[in-house]
Length: 178
Ligand SMILES: [Zn+2]
Ligand SMILES: [Zn+2]
Ligand SMILES: [Zn+2]
Ligand SMILES: [Zn+2]
Ligand SMILES: [Zn+2]
Image 1 (spheres, helix red, strand yellow):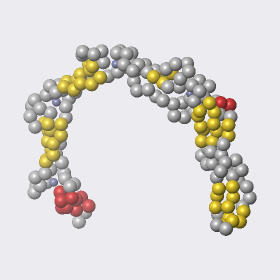
Image 2 (cartoon, rainbow, N blue to C red; image 1 turned 180 degrees about the horizontal axis):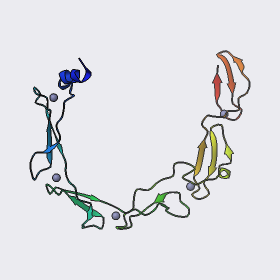
Image 3 (cartoon, rainbow, N blue to C red; image 1 turned 135 degrees about the horizontal axis):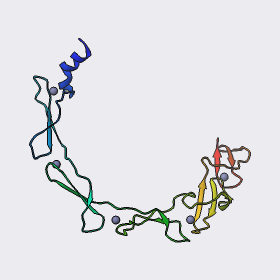
Image 4 (cartoon, rainbow, N blue to C red; image 1 turned 30 degrees about the vertical axis):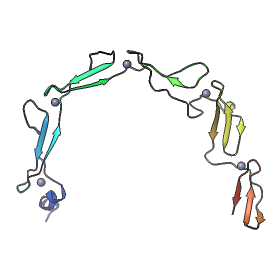
């Protein structure tokens, strides 16, 4: 028995039907159906297939848009804004804001999360710790950390202790046990 024969034999039992093309159920509606074409199977499926027009601005607000299905007349509405570019909210802030060019709505603010968002140069993070570099943002004055991928401890020599071998970092309080 070939593979296709095998599929024909067991397919419908495991959900591998041989579906017909989608056809509209009614002239003015958008429901489509498709049936399994194998003889003993009565399986059928349905889907909605609207023919949407383009989104058009139609009010009442400047950004309220609507589209209509050309078959069934269904309507969908949503606000489509035309966002301006992101700008810092003030010369002493790293929070970025943007507004809609059409209705002036303010989008959700972008708060800085990394030194890149603060636009900091290497010389702005001069303080080196075991875990990364630290510095104050020249624009918004926030303390910003630039973490290392791996901590860089200044390990002293291994020492024997009652609990086993330990070593201490010369810069922070970290201790490591062997
Ligand atoms: Zn079937
Ligand atoms: Zn429709
Ligand atoms: Zn808008
Ligand atoms: Zn900043
Ligand atoms: Zn350390």
